[in-house]
Every structure is written in C-alpha cells, then in structure tokens.
Image (tube, rainbow, N blue to C red; front, top):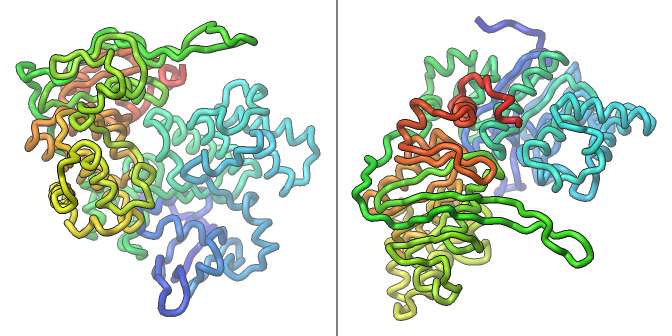
Length: 545
C-alpha cells in the first residue's frame, strides 16, 4: 500500500517545445506528475522519451529561448516555477531543489578543486565564511563516503575515480539540505558495484534528511530498489503511472510491458573445447613504468595486466568482467597488439607478439573491435558509408567504388539497417542505431575475432537486448570468436560461455559462465554478482577494499 504524503511539487499539463514557428518540435506533451515530501518518484522510459527535459523544466535549466513551454505549470511551495522571476529561481536552485547529473566528469568544473566547487554552493546560498565552509565541505565529503576527505580537498576532478566524482556531485547537491533532489541517471556511467554503493548512499541520506527524490532512469532494476511511485514516459507523454509494485507486477500499457521484459535474454552458444583456438596467451603482462626524479628513472610499475592466460575458440564468447581499473580493456588492447605487452600471443597458430605495425596490418581485417560509446567512436564529419568503407579502402584496395558501396549496403542490412543509411550522418541516428553502424564497420571486413569493449553500456535496456540478439546471430552465422568486456553481468550471462573475473590486473576466478553465475568461489565474484543482479549487497567491504 502506497503512503499518502503532502504534495511538495506538482506539474500540471507541462509541455516543452524546441524551435519556433513551423519548425517547433514538441518534446514533452501535457504531462502531469506529483512528488510528496520525503517520497521517491521515478520517471522512466527510453532515451528521447522526455524524462530529462521534464526534470530540467523544474529548475528552468533548458536552453531558453530555444526551449519554451506552450502549456503547463510547476507548483513548488505555492510558487509556479515557470513564472517566477529569475532572481527567485536562483534562490531555489541548489538550495531548495538540487540536481545530480548523469556524467560527473562533464558536470564538474575541470579547473576548480573539489573544495572550491562544493564550497561555492554554501557561499552562494548561505553566505558562510571560509573556515565554516571548509568544515562543512569536510563533513559533506565524509558523509558521502570520500576516504581521507582532507587529502581530497585540493584535488581536481580528473584526479578522482568515476565513483568518487559522483560522490562529490552528491555532496554538492546535498550541501544545503534540499527539499527535493533530482537524480538524472545518477549511476549510468558507473560500475555495478559502485552503482550499488551510490544507490545505498542516496537512500541513507534521504532517510536522514527527509528529502524527496525524483529519480530519472531507464534501468528498471534501480527503480525497483529506490522508488515508491513510477511514471512511465514514451514519446513525450506519460503512458502509465502508479505504485511501483503495481506497475511492475501488473503493467497495463504495452510500452510498460515492453520495458519490463527488455532485459537481455537467451543463452550463449554451448561451450565446445574441441573448436579450434583463434587466440591464445599465457602469463601476459602489461606494466606501465612509474618514473621519478630529474633523470626520470623507473622506480616502480603499474601492473595493469599481471600474468593473465586465456584461450578463445571459434564460435565462442569469452567474457572479461570486473570493475573499472581492473585491467579488462588493457587486456583486450594488448591481445589486439594495440598496446605493448610481455608474453606470447598466438593468433590462429601464429605468434604475433613480436610483429611490428607493418607486419600486423594484414591481420587487422581479421581482428576487429567495437567500442563502448557509439557517440564518440563514429566521426561526425563522415557519412555512414565513408565510416564503414574506411577499412575496405585500406585492406581491400582492389575494390572499386561500386563494389565498396555494395559491401557497405550488405553490412548495413546484416545489422538491421537500411542500405540507404550509408548516405546519412551519425547524428541522424539513435544510440542503438549508431552501435549497429559500429558493428557493421567491424563486420564489413569479415573478421574472425572481434573485441567488444562495453558495447551495450551506453544504451537503453531494450536496445541492449536487441544488440545482444544481433551479436549472437552474427556469431552463429559467421562462426566468430568474441572477447566481450563488460561490467554488466546480465549481458555477460546472455552472451558468454566462459568468464574471466579480473581485479587489479589479475584473474581472481574463471570458468564456464554457468558455473560462475551458479556458484562463484571467490568473495569478490559473489559481491559483483550481488551488485549486478540487484540482490542485496552484503559484501560492501570487499568492493570498497
């Protein structure tokens, strides 16, 4: 039964449009929602559904006058926030209503230290002196779980990990003990273990301060943990709302049912040790020297990968999992010979670890990579056709323009896109479509081995499921060997038949995927699984150590 709470903020018939005149686009269409005091309300939906635009309207942070409100009111403590003067809004922002943004690295000022950024909020709204501000900043950093906060006061954002940066963002947002906290995808950019810690921290701070929270997310697992009521958005409209348990257990709208069933499903190909080995290595090391002194002598090493052995077979998928900094991507880049390493690397029976760049070039068409961010990995200046054909121009110089265009079209159709997409540019596509383009770029060269570096982490869950199905289909038809790097164990479970668990550059556990998920031996693996599969985390000390 949902508790009835005094209304803190209420939006009525809110609309948001971008552009002017006939070129105006309606991004949010007459939505209404309410949040009670101390209540957690989730606004869920896929990218482009209007979640963030609705939330930013509360604080009037949209790019006005390009953005406008054709209709609606947002009442907060008797004020219509869409009509109050800007001077009044400045008193509300950061004081009574705060926000945590999705990507802390772009939200924090890279030129200011942590104490300057957290302290600025206190000085602006409370007028505190420097000594009082410093004490309060230390208190806030300790409260959000920053270790040795005094040592972190003078740090810049780039000197902190992703989880630490997000904790700083939370400290800034909670500095003045707001009535409402807007959390816009607060854990999307973080490892699952850090996600679990951040969510638990937010719940604890909410209980302590009695504040309300508007949680914006596409991850329904987070909604289950955090929210009391849910509003489901699609194409700028709210299509369903209600208590969290009701919406999840008995969804009424087809779109809500689609979201609830959107997690990656299916099973990976059956493990088969009789298949030929495509890639092998033993005792592989990637050490980065630490140099000090006037002569820059090597005094120590960062052991990013320290003695890893693996065998990857045709038609099989090897999953490499672990937190950020565990060495997953470094391992993959070393196997592709894009980083220097020590230890034998054998590709199709041939040692490649001693080959130089020129000698490796003929093998590049057989060893491809799909990167994490479909927005950053495609050049905005090139058409889709130019992006995909780039490898053909280098590796298949005998092909003429018409041949290349035919192959590019075939690759696009294979990944579920129209042939005519090659004449368009990346910005014209959604995130999921862009990742399909990135996969087509790899597949057009007909590789035998593909490294997939977090290829679904930047995507909505329903799009994740589609990409997993696509990768599984391509693997079956082409007999591909995948090295799948991820911290999302739900995706790993759906795609991989063997798993390596990495921590601090070493493999702490490995084995068939079904064994790892059913009965992990190591405490660290159990903690990862607990965080990733939305179980109660009882291993916080393991994750934090």
